Length: 379
Image (cartoon, rainbow, N blue to C red; front, top):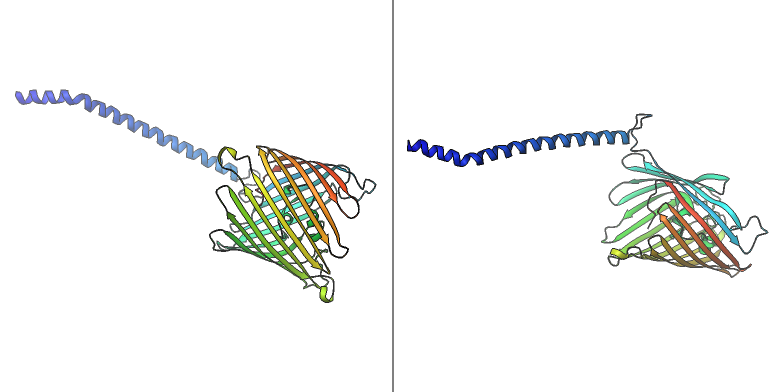
């Protein structure tokens, strides 16, 4: 009798706990079931979205390898104090479509990528400006082939819409020609095993630039070697220093048959951390020299300052010298840029050109816009 009483007492004592545990265990099991159903639903939705994003409903083919397409437009208003009676003036007073660029870029397969640029200066001539196929062979070695912006100096590698000033530096025009140095060629980049970024670039070029090469023989190629280096001076400041040398046959004979080109550039970029992130400072300088019957040299230096989220102010000085007639040019530029977003820029620029013919005062107002994919610019 005492035993039954003891059992009854124990059941009364533990029953609430057992019931609570049973209820809790049942609730947990129910919650787990609901979570599993929710996970399955989310996975199903993700698969459907992924399928619809990567498959073209028109063709049924994967769009993951389709090219990224963008259109860059430059609309320009110009005032020039000189040459208004000359219709062939480079920067003449008036309104114009300075340039349109159509870019297509994408992966051909898992290791080969193609980037192409078609441009139209003004509203008449449309043609291929750049076509580069690149492939990563190893972690340190990559190859490029096609029509290239030759990496000699910084400015020569920039498309018109990404150049920091409207007016081209007189140093680049004098040494590399009005259209810069763009060549069909083959190149290889090798990343050196250093604790900082250091890359060696070698290129074999067709050598068609009339201001520098333009050999009269079919095997008159041009060759380029370049060392590119970048360092972190601190968490907020980086430095880039590059040296390039190119040589090749030209259309002359005798001791002037070979053209040599040298390019040196240096760049500092300071971007404060934290709340002062919109106070970026950039200083860049570049020296160019070429020898083709005569020596031509030039350099520029400019300073850019971002003083607010959407505003940049910048100034540049450029100088060029030609040995044959001992003529030089001095160019001074000031610009103010407003970027409401990375796809749109309005720039107001004043340039004073002091040269052997006559001084020029140029005033530019340019609208620069991008439609579609917008890749990051070269550092």
